[in-house]
Length: 113
Image 1 (cartoon, one colour):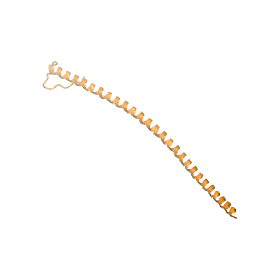
Image 2 (cartoon, helix red, strand yellow; image 1 turned 180 degrees about the vertical axis):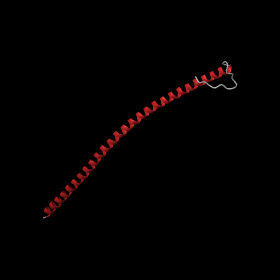
Image 3 (tube, helix red, strand yellow; image 1 turned 90 degrees about the vertical axis):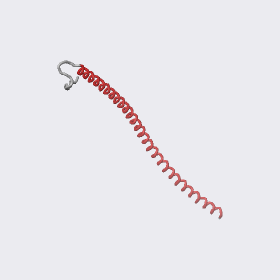
Image 4 (cartoon, one colour; image 1 turned 45 degrees about the vertical axis):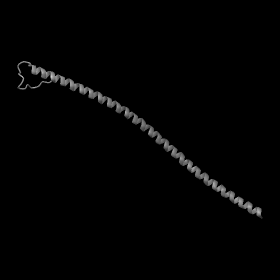
């Protein structure tokens, strides 16, 4: 309970109606302040709980994103490997085609003689 200095309007000798009313008003204000404090504390707790949930959701999303990033890296390596294989096969087929053309030319020349 807070003690307030007496003003000149309320006598100090006995608890006057003015002082009692003032004490009651102070008590009501204390209750209102306490209620508001409790309300704000509940709101802060609710916001902190929501933030915790959001932080967890963010961590899960980040984890999934990291996993997808790793998958993309693996798929890029596979793509590079497939492109290299495709290029090597094309080179191989080109060499075989040239060899077949050469054999064909030799056969046609041999046949014409």
